[in-house]
Image (cartoon, rainbow, N blue to C red; front, side, top):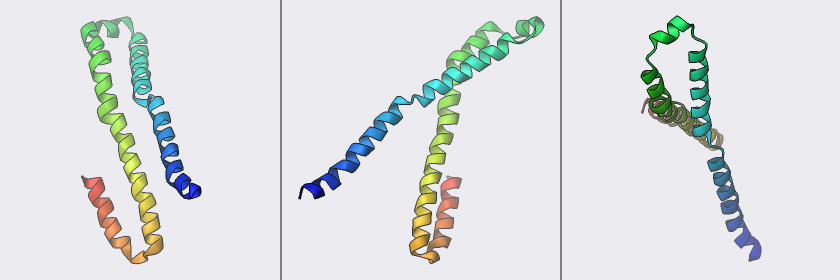
Length: 116
């Protein structure tokens, strides 16, 4: 009876631990910092004439407003899409292993997921 209870409880403990670890990775914040550092480094390496042609306020706005939007709406969405495609691939592998005739519907589902 104890072993059956452990079989129910242990996966939840593992999943919660993995979710906590994933939340501590700070991928979005690190990506924003990396992009801001590199944009500033690129700006610093401009020639004096090119640097004068760029508005300082525009540069500041890019660093404060545009970079977080690019990371959240671009990079993080790409990671989310990769996660769902990975789930689709693993699920498809197991479904086709059980029933090879299911390849057609899985292909249609994959195209629908990529399209939408």
